[in-house]
Length: 101
Image 1: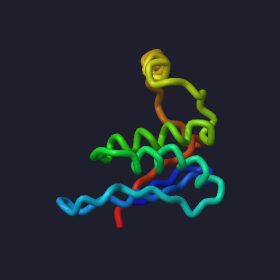
Image 2: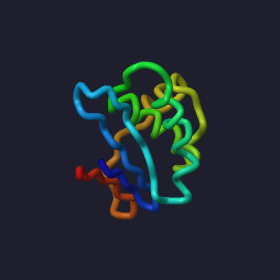
Image 3: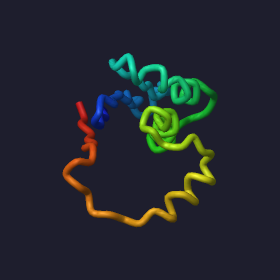
Image 4: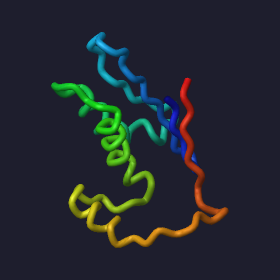
């Protein structure tokens, strides 16, 4: 799967085949993004089965500094997002997308 967002945030997630025992793999061709994926890559390499949701959460946590988000622990982030009101998207907001290959 390819994930991308403006400006210049993109990465790939290679999902394991069912039953083959392989792990997920994350990568980016962007020199700016690649160093931020280290946390997610370390997590994937650790013991135990991972879900796609868990892998994407780690990638998001890894990209927080690149996206200009506060570097907070999970509890503080949940508290923060509970206070944020839902707004209509504006035309000048970055667009995010996902494509499967």
